[in-house]
Amino acid sequence: MNAKKVVERQTGVALWRQIADLIRLSISNGDYDQTGMIPPEIVLASQFGVNRHTVRSALAALAEEGLVQAIQGRGTLIQRKERLSFPISRRTRFAQGLGDQARETEAKLLSQAALPAAVEVAAGLGIAPGTNCIMLDLMRSADGRPVSCSTNFFPADRFPRMAEQVERLGSITKAFAAEGLPDYVRVSTELVARHADADELALLRLSPGAIVIEATAVNADPDGVPVQFARTRFAADRVKLKIET
Amino acid sequence: MNAKKVVERQTGVALWRQIADLIRLSISNGDYDQTGMIPPEIVLASQFGVNRHTVRSALAALAEEGLVQAIQGRGTLIQRKERLSFPISRRTRFAQGLGDQARETEAKLLSQAALPAAVEVAAGLGIAPGTNCIMLDLMRSADGRPVSCSTNFFPADRFPRMAEQVERLGSITKAFAAEGLPDYVRVSTELVARHADADELALLRLSPGAIVIEATAVNADPDGVPVQFARTRFAADRVKLKIET
DNA sequence: CCGAAATGTCTATTAATATAGACAACCATA
DNA sequence: TATGGTTGTCTATATTAATAGACATTTCGG
Image (tube, rainbow over all chains, first blue to last red; front, side):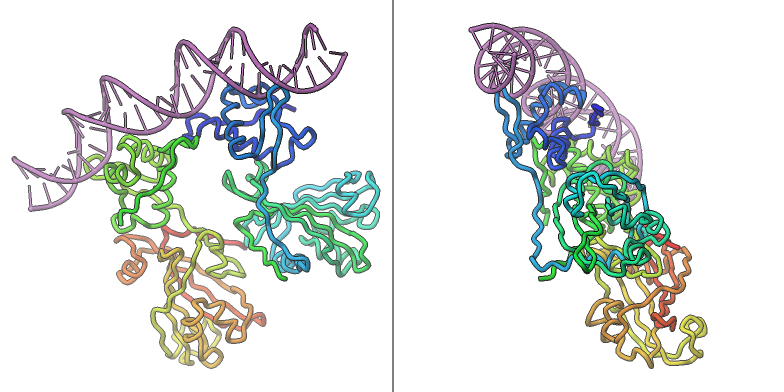
């Protein structure tokens, strides 16, 4: 549970700098959203396996950035979350813009599961929380190069065979078609940019400090009924998002 | 001219680490290609505004990576360079294949000619030997560094204006598009590696004994009709070819 | 109001980083 | 072979990074 975050010594990068970077990542990752606060210094010191003063140096750097604010007796509050803002117009044709790329890419099914919808997913799909969903983890590659990894949710009652279809056809578009849905449209898209976490670094073969663009999107059938809730992380230095106004 | 490289202090990143990173960048950028050596330690120390010992720490780190090798009395030799990864697939295109590896790619038209097809060219293009062809000699660079030179043949009756288009657009893909062929695919690729000849040494700015990878390829339009026969010589120490089947 | 929990501040010590200078060892070449 | 230029090694010193411990200060809840 208290997975020890890893910091390396004698790499030419000070421990407090590594720790500051990791905490910044956790903040923008939403790890501390429940409390809105950074864990106590003594806890962080234990997690990272360093002295409390080293953690304090890291927190001082983040406070200097304006990211956090320490209050004596209470704790260290998160002031703002670091997000690179991506301008996007009202009439975004995001689905087509990425659809072209998606058709050229190969989608590899990493894992699948059937589980009840979490609140956010349920809201996106317009169903009651707890309703059964199919979850698919995909990785997309273009010319053998990882471009994105994504987590996708589909209503289980309508698309029970989604996993098999995606695995067989290597494409969500084709899987939808095989399931009797030849066309669908993007109804909402949210973009954020942040640093890649450890899993994404490994999956997308990125170097530490790399940026991913996270797209949270809902697709719906022609009648406007949501059919897919997707969260896709693109290797930011590998894709070019064309915003059409 | 001796633009001082900038290193910052008290950032939590040791000076020797910053300097090592900058030198690695210069190596892969080709800044030292003329000599194949790193500048003397005393010169680097002056450029970065640090002590010679600090530079030595940086070079020691790069030697540990196997990137350079110091020889007492002579200097510090560059052992290998990070290579551009070049995917070879059905949809191989020079600039797109390099993707974000290079900020800027350039195709320069060296020479052009109209001549009857030799036997090998005719076989590749599926035409009778002696049929008129357009021949273009190109050199391609990424971020100002020569990457490959190529000899390209096109059927003269179908693409009479190929030379002008390539010269104007700086890209074969774009030239094809301008000539009414928006898409094409790679139908065959053969690779050999050999020593560079005198012309290639000069053209690609290689040192004697350098190796080139020669790719002989045929591209065809969507109907399978050959449109291009190309023989490309890559500077072997600058590229990594990814074969995707 | 008291005490637990959290941050703030101080001193002291050790290790890593950076600077400075001197000189040895080695290589290429005139 | 003599010389200039380069890397290798050594000593010494100062600064920064990291650890360790003690205690003060503040906040919050019982």
